[in-house]
Image 1 (tube, rainbow, N blue to C red):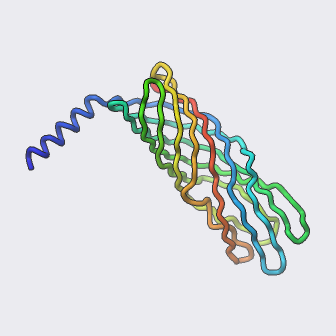
Image 2: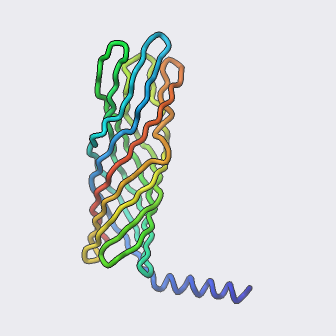
Image 3: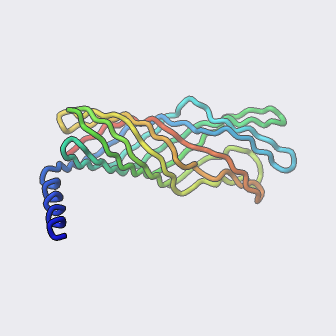
Length: 209
């Protein structure tokens, strides 16, 4: 048992001695959409079709990152503020009136990526937790309307990157959702559920110190 413990300690020291730890800042733009395709029928005759528009809307992000590299493998936790949005086409199925509504979110994103380096190039993927700080999403113009947005969501990121002079980091990623943004809406005390998600493409520039 002591030999195994000593071996684990020796391996830990060996990995730590050969690991490279870097800290940096990052920022960039993102193109996001709202995935939604539902129909809400309200008692009293109102009926609405909600459909996410596929064309992306532009947001931004900025924050911090850390990278621990050992033998070509790296782990990269990040923390950054992001602003995302998406457009929803709302159709009143009774009057056939169509309007375009925008859903906006301000979040703290916490991805933890793992990947491999091939010279200056990288591939990486990992989970991301998003804490929603603020949201704006008035989809339906009716009395007693209230969005039921969650305080946190979970998803994943995957993409490729390029390191220039071991200082500048360029990244292109896709972020998908493992949980929905909320549980729907509350109208006049009644809950109406629909599945809304906010996938995005992320383009980042980072600088390591």
